[in-house]
Figure 1: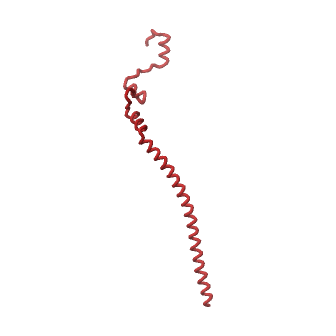
Figure 2: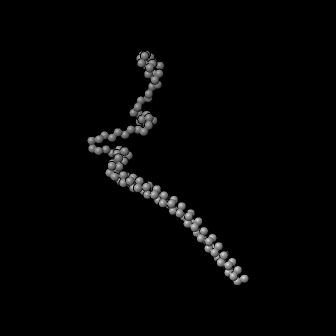
Figure 3: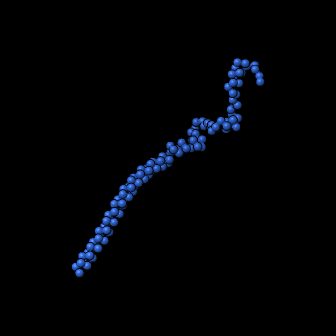
Length: 118
């Protein structure tokens, strides 16, 4: 009786140990996949970081600063001329720098009949 009880106890403890070890193996297997994903994400972030550092270096360069000053503030070097053009035809018409265009049919009519008046 005592040996049967001892065998049963050893069997239960052994079963619990095997169950616990299998659970740990499954968790480790899952974590291995997460580590791989983490490494891949880390590499992507390193690449993005290098790209952003390059952009920062360019933005801080004298060439970029000069380009921005010229384009946004309209500055020029000595001897250069700056022309500021309106962004749309509507702005040009509001300023009055362009005259109202005649329709093509009126232009043709005036071409063939210069003395014709409406």
